[in-house]
Every structure is written in C-alpha cells, then in structure tokens.
Amino acid sequence: MSTIFTKIINGEIPCYKIAEDNDFIAFLDINPLKKGHALVVPKLEVDYIFDNSEETLSKILIFAKKVAKAIEKNVECKRIGLVVVGLEVPHTHIHLVPIDHEKDLVFANPRVNMTREEFMILAKQINDSL
Image (tube, rainbow, N blue to C red; front, side, top):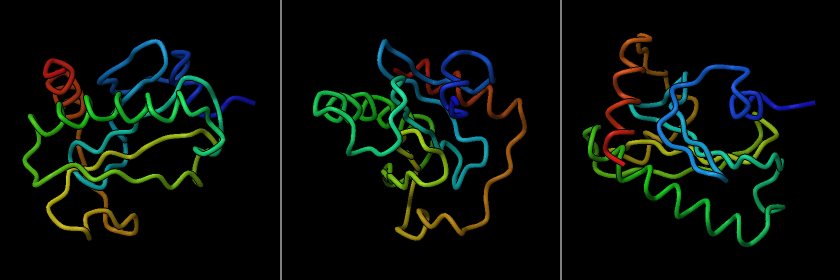
C-alpha cells in the first residue's frame, strides 16, 4: 500500500510543492512547526532513512541544501534546522524547519496556522528562489 507521500508524488493528493527533480520532491508541511517548514522526500518509497542507498543518502542532502537556502531567502530565521524522525509516515523524509532556537524543533510545540493562500504564496516564493 502506498504511503501518503507516494500519493503526493503521484499527484493523487495535492501539496504545496516547492521543488522537484527526478529523485526527490519538497513541499510545505501542512501542519508546520514554523512558517516555511518543509519536507524533502525521495520518490523511491523506502521506510527507514538508513535503508536507502548511499547514493540516495548523499543526493537527498544536496537536494535539501538547495531547498533550505531557498527557504532562508523567504522566511526570517537564524538557520534551517534538519530533523529526521521517520515514525509518522513509513517513507523516508527530512523536515527542514526555519529556527531561531533549538526549541523550535520540538514536535510537541503548537503548530502554526496558515491559510491556503498563505501556503500557495510561500510555496511560489520559495520555488522562485531556487
């Protein structure tokens, strides 16, 4: 059975896409810790990040770096935090979260509410910065 991320990759579920290439997709998290919180997902569905090939592991970080730099251009923050949890969806993914403090990466924190229009505008701005 396909994960929600595979369904997003296949266009079965909409997303606020900010980047895509042959191997990866990046889109805004719809329940963000901070404005600009994005997910980077390999198109190949592998549950545990360390079960991916070495090539995929190195390429995902290079792709994530491009996305992070584009987020930084559009969201005020000290830096982009990177988190791999991997329990909530059985498909490798990296969280990129704009942060000012380490506590900004606590997943128990209240989430940011954004409108559909705010998501769409931010996704376009980040994509345009790539």
